Length: 137
Image (cartoon, rainbow, N blue to C red; front, side, top):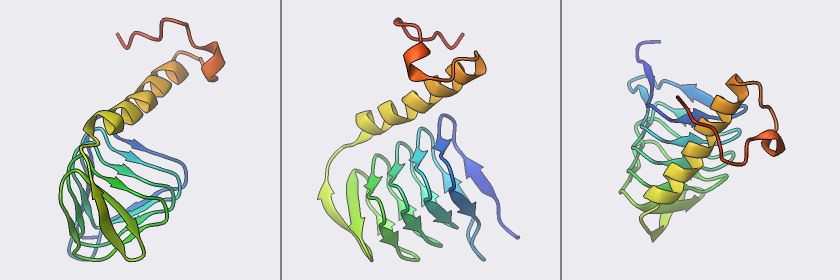
């Protein structure tokens, strides 16, 4: 392997994901991203606050702009450039809408941060969380 994998602060990589470098491209995941179950990021770059849906595939050299959503089962082909604030779906994937998803995507990532904090404190089920939430400090 000649390239690297980079995962930004606050991002979460969920069950059964594959993160792999391409032959000529690293795998870069920005800050506050969610790469959901069974998704693949292969030698691609995700901007900040991106949500990758279940079983989506992002291929070598593709770039997903900040605040975007890639729908479940989408296939983003090699070298595809997705602008910021896009909603992407299909096989092959294409932009189907434009909307600033920043707040919603950060909220999703923040849930997983809080979940990790809770787990580290021995709280393993949502119903066991304190009603006022957890303080990360």
